[in-house]
Amino acid sequence: MLDVCLLGTGGMMPLPYRWLTALMIRYNGSSVLIDCGEGTQIAIKEKGWSFKPIDVICFTHYHGDHISGLPGLLLTMGNADRTEPLTLVGPKGLERVVNALRVIAPELPFQIKYMEITEPEQTFEMNGYRLKAFRVNHNVVCYGYTLEVDRAGRFDVERADAAGIPQRYWGILQKGESVEVEGNIYTPDMVLGPARKGLKIAYCTDTRPTESIKKNAAGSDLFICEGMYGEKDKLKKAKEYKHMTFYEAAQLAKEAEVGEMWLTHYSPSLTRPEEYMDEVRAIFPRSVAAKDKRSVELVFSD
Image (cartoon, rainbow, N blue to C red; front, side):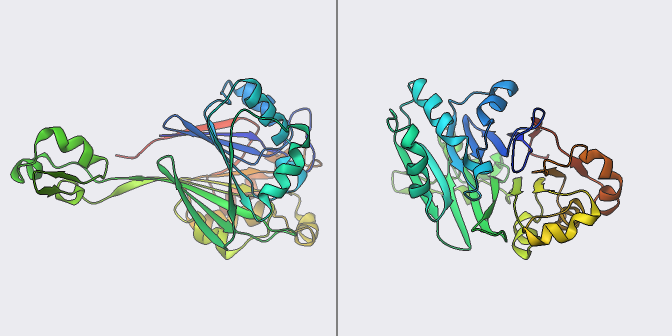
């Protein structure tokens, strides 16, 4: 099960009813934050979630509306006597950028681990999920992310009994680990059926449509995508500043065959994004003009 909350949906600057970009995902006792715009701490508090389980923060790129909330969040974590390490993931220059921001948060009671993205696509395995960064097309180096949780096949009791595997080792095998007992090696494939469908979230913002987005978002249960502009006459501006319109995002969702798409990262001038959704849904029916703190609980299908 994945708990997903789009904490902020604004681009460029916060508004009284719209915080800047941030996405929080909770899984198995840990939390991932993707981007940390100004107001992220308040949005987390308003949602009623906790800072404590956040152990990974990812950044798409280093424009202020995606990272300006980090120093305050680090200070809050430090003031809460956090001692567990915090992992930061982002494009090249991550440590340099964060250290510059930490001029106002120089002393922290926990370690920061830096994981820089150096390839067009790069995968990180951590905390029971798979995090993949993929390059998109903005006017600075920028990445989208997918987060996937795999699901093993069903445990076959009859096969386990037939193989003479003691019951006390079944739980270990079900977790995908092998067991060696008195010279006998028991492996998960001896007792598990074919892998079942897992869970997948894709997230991208500040980009033109790209093949990398379509490829990596393919089959996602939830695709969260920037829709900077709903007005059709803003297409030229979207191309100039390397952003996306609602309709381009919907076309990507359609081609990637995702379960649902949430639009985010709206221009400050776009005060009523829902007004454009009829035409967006004509392209991809399962489109949502997301608002701050929109949430969903994704569960494994039977």
